[in-house]
Image (cartoon, rainbow, N blue to C red; front, side, top):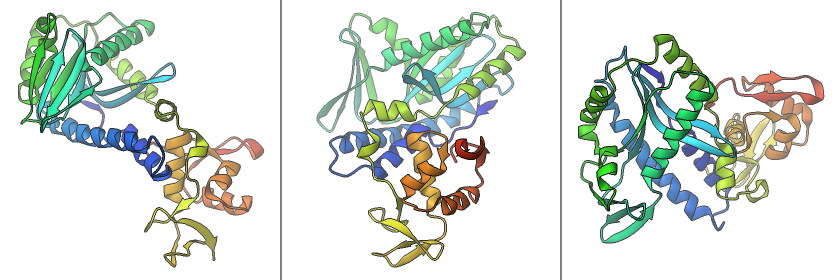
Length: 324
C-alpha cells in the first residue's frame, strides 16, 4: 500500500527555486546545477522502480516515497522506505551511467563514464546512517525492535558495477540492479519471517513519518552557505526570469516584455516557501515582492487560498498543503 505517493522531490523543487534566484556568476551556481541534474536523473531512476513495487503484496508492504526527516541541523532524505511486519528497508536509487565502483577499502564510490572518472559520496555510509536513524527513531517512539536494512539499487540497465576490497563480501548483498530487486526482497523475506509489528504499529509508524516529513529548506541553504542577501527578490517575469515585475493597473507588468500577468505572484510565493520556510507575513512578502502598500499585499495574499495564522501584527500565511 502506498502511504506517501511519489511526487517531484522537495529537494529538487528547492534547488530549482534556488537557481532561479541565484546570479549565474555566483561561485556555487554550477555546483548547485550539477546536484540538480544528478537528482533529476535519480528521480527518473526512482520512478522506474515503480514497475517492481507493483508486484509487492499491497496488504503487507507500506511504501513511503521521498521522506525528508529532521536530523538536527541536517536532513535525512530516503528515496523510498518499505515497511512490513517483519522488517524495514531503506532504498537508495542510483541512476548513473558507465561503470560504478564500490571501493570498500577506502570507502569510495567512483563512476567511470566515457573515460572520465568521478567520485561521489559513498552510498554504503549513507545506508548505514539511514539504518541507525530509523533504528533510533523506532526506539525513541517505543515501537518493537524490528530489523532495519538498506539497499542501493542501480536503475540504469546499461550500467555495470564492481565491489572491491576486503569487505566486498559484506557490501555486495547491499547492492543490486533493478531487475533483480525483487530477488533481494525474497531473500529478506526468508531471512526475516517472524512478524514483529502489528497492523496498528505500522499505521502509527506511517503517520509519524508523514508528520515528520519536512521541507529541507535550511539544510539546502546551509549546505551551500547561501545567504538571503545572495538571492534575487521580486516577482519574476513568466516569459524572461531575468526581468522583475512591478504593479500596474492591479496587475504585474514587465516593461521589457510589455506584458501583463494577473498571477505571477504565485510563483514568487512558491519560491519564498521553498527557500525561506512554510510561512510568510505581510511585511516579508512586501519586501520580497517589492510592493509598497501593505493593503495591496494583504489583498494579494488573501486571494491565494492560503491559511491565515495568528491575528493582527502577528498574522502570517501558509499553504494548506506542500508542495503548494
